[in-house]
Length: 179
Image 1: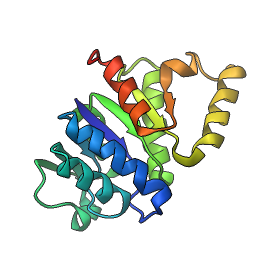
Image 2: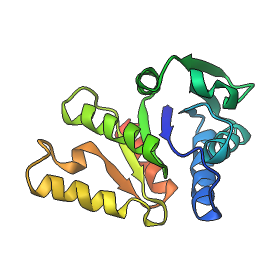
Image 3: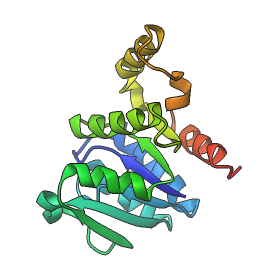
């Protein structure tokens, strides 16, 4: 399975790196491929290191203005011209999407895949890994959108909220008939 992970390139505390390493190990040990932004910094590096160490493959999609931060020695690396092309390529290469903690870039990527799902443009499973309650506010906002009629599909059709990495992987495997 090619698992696209949207996440931060920031250096973060153990609160966020521990679950990221755990999910990375599940990707690698499962024989899956990490599809990610290609950076070799911050949480992106933590996940890539973990997947590689556990035997998984690395497929990066960097962007021209960040290529100097791209990880070397990966199984596959593509350099996109801009962020819009990067998102398109990440989603094209993925069988499933996991959204980890991140800033505005991660939020942009998350809302794009959810918008595509909302309109039936993709049926890829999407998991929001709610590490340490990071996305509690967003989850509440999504529920309000659903309750007040802003979503034409049930929220559960768009995204699965997982509190721990093992739950995220179980959902992906079940969704793609791997269990």
